[in-house]
Amino acid sequence: MAMRKIQLLSSGECPGYTLTELLVVLGTVALLSGVIAMTFSVITTTNRMNTDETIAMLQVHEAGRWITKDVQSADNVTGYSDVAWNCAMNCFKWTGTSVATVLVEYVIQDGVLLRKVNGDQGTQIAMHLADPGTNTLFSKSTSENNTYLLSVRAVYNGASISKAYKINKRIAEVSEP
Image 1 (spheres, helix red, strand yellow):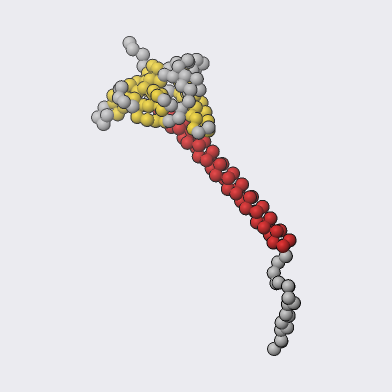
Image 2 (image 1 turned 90 degrees about the horizontal axis):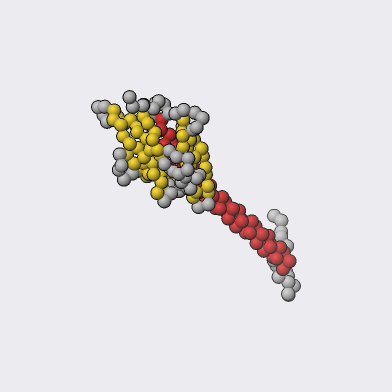
């Protein structure tokens, strides 16, 4: 069995690290802590921005989906304007035994898009819609018959999403005899 030598330290000598070694380790730990803090900050900021953009995108999508569905099934689209927000149409609704015509209007109040059927109080379709009549606009195409143009812009916490829809009616307008 090998014998180990025990070295006795002379007085004043202390086992451990030198002051320079400790300062280097503390500097390295401080640098790594700073890098980790910056990475965490970037990740949380990016996540918040992505969430804001997703919320705005979903609001634009919902507005486009509902209005497109109603225009495609409308008998007669009566409300549209090139200068102000206006969207109204007569749509067919299955009542369970027959088909009835209902008046569907879309109204924007304080950035909230409401779908009103036969003048009821309305169902909330989308929120955070911006600039009704400017960036959020419903109009009839001047170049194509039975085609409507919808531009929707939503703004949420600095995130802004815009989308344009070209909606072709599936049912030709019925003219009164």
